[in-house]
Length: 402
Image 1 (cartoon, rainbow, N blue to C red):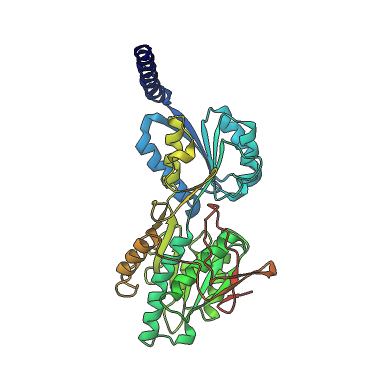
Image 2: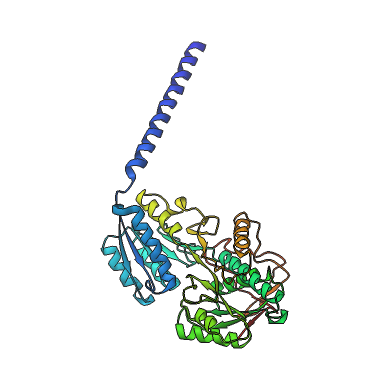
C-alpha cells in the first residue's frame, strides 16, 4: 500500500513538473511571438519647433525615429487648437495609429473621450490629471516630468549669484528680489515658482519674489513687458513659466546700475541673453515616450515599462529617472563653483535628501484664503499625480504684482 502511494505521489510530482516546464516554455515563446513588428505613432502638438515647449517633444520624437528606424512610422500634427483635437485624433486613427501622444493640458478632456471611442488605440496625454478619474480607461494614460525639481535646482544657481551680488556690494540685502513672469494662477505654475524661490532662499535666505501673471501661455510682447515691469519694480533676477524669449531679452536689455539676470525654462537662453542668462531647466519627454512605444511594440502595459513614479494610469519622474534636465550653466556670469553646487544638489535630490516644499512658511490658496498649508509639515509634490498640485502662495515672501 505504501509503495503504491509512493508511486502515485511520484507520478503526480512528475506531472506537475512537466506542466510547469510546458507553461514556462509557452509563456516565453508567447511573449516572443506577441511582439509587434511595426507600430504607427501619432503626435499632436499645440505648437511647432518654434515654440520651446513643443520643441522639446519634437526633439524626443526625432530621437525616437533614430532609435527605432523602420520599426515605427510617425505622423506629427502641429499647431492644433484645443477644439480641433478630436478631428485630428479621428484622422490619426483612420491612418492606423496604434498609439497617440497629445502634449497640451487643453487636449485632455477630448483625448480621454476619444480613448473611450477607440479602445484599441493607446492614448498618452502630457501634463493632464484625468487618467485616474472615472471612467478609468486602460488605454488612456497621463504623464509629466517632476519639473519642480528643476525649478528648485535653478533657484540654487540663482540664489548663489544673488548672494555673491550682496557679498560684493553690487546690491544690498533689501534688494534681493526675484521676479517671475507667470502664465496663469494654476498649480503647475504656482508649484514651479514656489520651488524656484525656495531654491533661491536655500542660498540667499532673505530673498523675496514678485509674480506677474500674463494670462497666456505665450506671447513675446506681453512676456517682455511683464519682465520689464518687474525689473522696474526692483527685481534683479527674472524667471518665467511662459513660452518665448521675451523675459530673457528684457533682462539683457535692462538699463540698471546693476546687472539683471535670467533663469530660463524649456530652452537655453544664452544665445539671446549672453550676459544675463544663468541656466535653464526642462523636461526630457523622451523617457516616457520611448517606454510607451516599447510597450506597444511588445503588446505590454505601458506603466510596466516606465521607469518612474506610477499611480494607476499616471506616471512621472525627476532627475533620478532622467525625466528632468538642467541645461548648460553660463559659467561666465554664474557665481563661482555653481556647477559643483548644482551637481551636488542634483545628487542629493536623486537620493531623496532634498525636501523642497518644507520650511517655516504658510501657504494660502489664492482662490480660497481659508485654505492654508503650514510647510513645517512637508508638502510632497507629485506624490499622487504627475501633474503638480501645490497651489499655495507663500505669505510674506511672495507678492502678486498687478
